[in-house]
Image 1: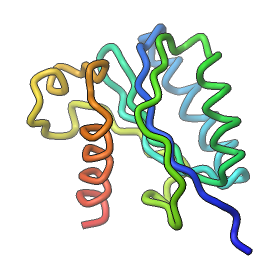
Image 2: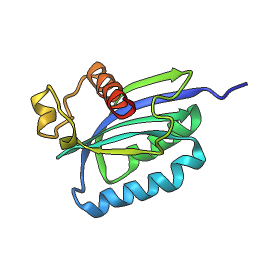
Image 3: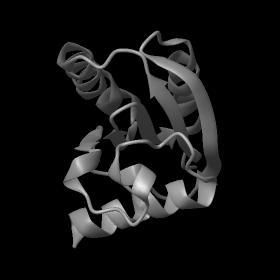
Amino acid sequence: MREKLKQVIYVSERTDLSEDSLTNIFDTSHKNNPEKGITGCLLIGSNSYLQFLEGPNLRVEELYSKIKLDSRHKNVKQLHDQSVEEKLFSSWSMKFAPFNNLEWSNQEFDSGNFLNIEPEGAINVFHSINEVMNG
């Protein structure tokens, strides 16, 4: 029997805007996520993160709980939580995408502010990224 998969999308305010902080997140994700079966995408905005996590149900819940306590984030808000049959970003331990590498139809997104995104908008963003990246 296959393990249940879960997808979570959250938005949070960045507390540390340094490159070192981003490097640390990147290194930790690439070290820990593959062995836990976690994949996803992190959008790095000027003042916020928008992240899509997916993987085994318990592992995603554990990681999301850690993120909520992580000092690099504040005002963490869950936008989406769903059980799924298959992953959207199955080949990415964690894809990092600076907000300015993508074209947005939303002015706040254009400025790198994800804090006011609605759940449906967040889901659409990650589906669009998947389409662009996988052609």
